[in-house]
Amino acid sequence: MTRRDTISADKELIKRTLDGDELEVYRDHAETAAARHLVLIRGGEWCYVVFRKDRRKGLPVFASILHVSNPPLFRAMARPLARHLLLHDGAAAMLLERAVIDHRPRLAIVVDSPRRKMFSSPTLDSAQIDYLYSELMCLPW
Image 1: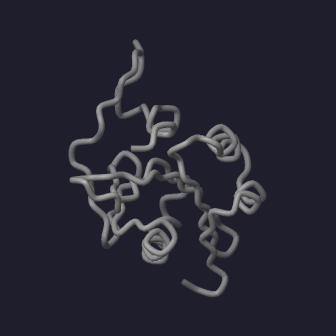
Image 2: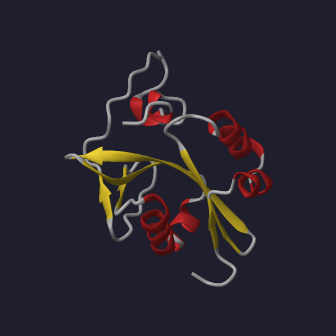
């Protein structure tokens, strides 16, 4: 991480950094029980990351990445992000689905069988449905 890199969960910094649809997503989820929010900043670029802490095999040490607004910056900052998640959130590994981010950083686990998505649409399929407006944002477990 360079001196100009920033990884922060600070609500005011997130609100000042995000714009457009990403700011709307943040406002929609800022107070949900399970969603955790980070902004990654490098130079003039930013990436909004939404994750939740998850328990697998009884271990509460996973960060499930649910949303990434800027995949190239996420990839570039994956190592400092992993360090941040460990030190600030107690997450020893990230859980990723290829639909959310196609890069697998070190200490990340690609989930081969994603969570079942419950929806009803005559025009959309499950690959077009994300987790942002689902129970995963509201229910910690």
